[in-house]
Length: 205
Length: 205
Length: 205
Image (cartoon, rainbow over all chains, first blue to last red; front, side, top):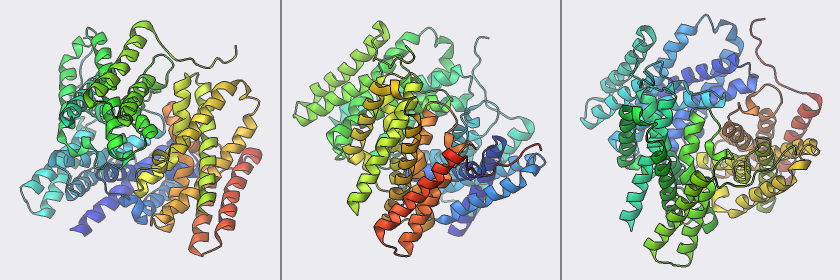
């Protein structure tokens, strides 16, 4: 079980780091800026969760594997940025996969630390969306997650909520994890391909 | 006593969440963005304080009541945003009330965790202004608290300092809390109605 | 030894606070905004490090000396801002000195708390660059550390890495500290005076 969670967590870190490094290249940052944005995007969600649930030092600080994953992503993007446009769509898919993995692993870790079910679901969502928010704040733009274009955090919350429900009702572990991650991925995928979104308030109409 | 503090804390959370949700509606965010900004504005001040004084998990994470208060505020604003303009002035008053409550409850909580008097006053101020700063960073504008337009953080610092003085000199609890919150509210109110402000350095004159 | 580290830490806090207060004056903030930016720039790097390594409450919260240093810097800048242009170059030198001190003290503190060598070097770098990043986020611009203009975080990482190597190989303490800080300062100085920088990816060429 722990192995499954660790693999999901490291894979999520890698794909988010790819998205951070790509944003850095688009901003024409130097090699260090690319590495910083890769690290921040890949780990800030989990670090925030761990600080909030009192699990310090956070996993991403205590275990060098996380930093190494983001470094690998930075290297891949730095030397492969000419191909970024060509693989744009797969990147969005990987990003959805990262969101799904983090939403589930973050929720389970919060439950392990005794956080209540409702707030554990929120912590799972924070794990999923935190890295991307930090990436956008660092390049001084409004976080994409707040903009009313795509179903993003809601997909994470759906996945983390299903994880909480499964854990509360004692469903078998592996199927629950896979279903919850799959639900998040499905919602995000439909948002990307079919434009699913949430209602926004209408002003001045 | 604890009941008084809890009521003040939850009331402050609610009114700040109202201001965050209102900013989100003005930015035309979707229903999730409204909920996120309501939660961040209502709880980040207290969460920051708790992380800094070592009280993890923070109250707003450990107790679902805080998240529920911000959710209620988001719902109120999401469905009532057509009336936002009409109640602008009361919102500013509620915001001042929230600032006053958080400055006092944040200071007392820091003292309870063994923080020194000077830094406890700073922590009270951080509790009061943290949520609004996060709200502004998330929508990529310079935090209002830094702009030289209004007496805001200074009012919070006055309230938290009076709380520290009262606690140090063993004044009776309830009157101290009410006087400190009242001082903060009075200063903020005069800034809003009479334009009280601090001096700014003059450049190029 | 502890005395040396404390002196370096407080001196670094002061010079960074000077840079934060100067940025605040350039943004025409009021006296409180100047004090907030001085405090944030001087202490956020160390506070972030302490929160991440689980050393709460952070030094800068537990010991009022840090806040007093930033207050002193704010007062100096607030009343001396007419001379800011004249001392611009010395300020950049002081800033490089602060970066060097924080990179070393942050690394040693992380090692003291049992962080692994690789991540201790990262924590040293975070201590050095955190304050400046927060300063820039608060005034809603992209952090200077991310912009491909100057060797900055890389200099900090070089200093913190040398500190880790020295600590791992049991080199004598004081020379190691001075050499590591000196390396960071030299790299930053050459970046300022000779334009040393890292390669950036080339797009559309």
